[in-house]
Amino acid sequence: MKAMASAPAKTILFGEHSVVYGEPAIAGAVNKRAVVKIRPSKSDKSILKSYDLNFEAELDTENKKYVLKKGKPGIIRYILEALSKVHNHSPIEILLSSNIPIGSGLGSSAAVTVATLAALYRYHNIRFNKKSLAHDAHMVEEAVQGIASPLDTLVSTYGGLVYLSRNKKVEHFKVNFNAPFVVGYTNKHGNTGKMVKDVRLLKNRNPKVINNVISSMGQLTNYAKQAILKRDFDKIGELMNINQGFLDVLGVNTFELSRMVYRARECGAIGSKITGAGGGGSIIALCPNNIDQVAEGISKEDNVLKIRFTRKGVSSRVRD
Ligand SMILES: Nc1ncnc2c1ncn2[C@@H]1O[C@H](COP(=O)(O)OP(=O)(O)O)[C@@H](O)[C@H]1O
Ligand SMILES: C[C@@](O)(CCOP(=O)(O)O)CC(=O)O
Ligand SMILES: [Mg+2]
Image (cartoon, rainbow, N blue to C red; front, side):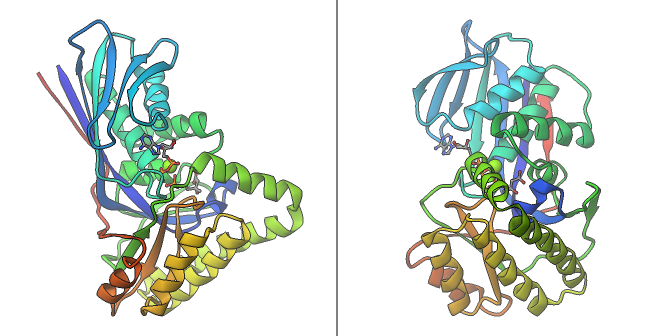
């Protein structure tokens, strides 16, 4: 029996970090995916391989440990945590492919987690639905990172452009929002777990100021929801720029992210902001009239990722 599953990356338009404190957020699945294939191992060891990420590890699924043969370990923790929830420790081979830039604010950890869990459920013939999968994947991200909102795993599971409300209700935007966005990413990576913890420490040291900022970010997300429904690009852009200011206040901005944010605006973007946890990683720029100029401007010193929003969430199948 072989099982495979794939899940999309995402980009957060509004509400990263504040969503961790229960504020609303808006994020969309994008056309970059993580693919996980599982089959019985040819030896008595469980093996994890990724040619795309250039790593290989032997997994001790019972003790959540691994021996790294090649590459960087980070993402393995999400896979081991997923295995500890579902797998019976029989020796398996896991092959991970992904075209999502990793540690770049585009939700590679969520996509890998969702795809791994879905492939495992298929492999073990365990019934699941999107609701249970999104929940389990959120638990994995929380266990690995210490703190995590349900946003990334929800979007990666369901696909589409999603509004997550204060009371954790998921609404799918019906608008055709195949909007003119450019994503720029730097070679300096961020680490979500660390950034989320740093924001918490800042908030603990300055509760009155930071609590107000976080609730303003929630308010801003609700204004953005209205602007998206009306396809009012000027308003969306203005709100993205305010959101960027708030993210700077939270301490997740960097020199490289700022460079991309301002370069995008200089080249005609009507809004640009960090997307994801920051501390490195990506920005998103709204540029309805000049995508090419903005992409060219960013690519002078950083990288551009061509994205499209996609309705396609997780997908999975088995083969005998
Ligand atoms: N080349 C790499 N190989 C394996 N894991 C990596 C590599 N680069 C970063 N990681 C790990 O991948 C994870 C990325 O998750 P996260 O920080 O949430 O960023 P994102 O989800 O935006 O990609 C982190 O645990 C990080 O340590
Ligand atoms: C900062 C945060 O809001 C989003 C993190 O996204 P990413 O892992 O950087 O893609 C954290 C979370 O929602 O759990
Ligand atoms: Mg992540």
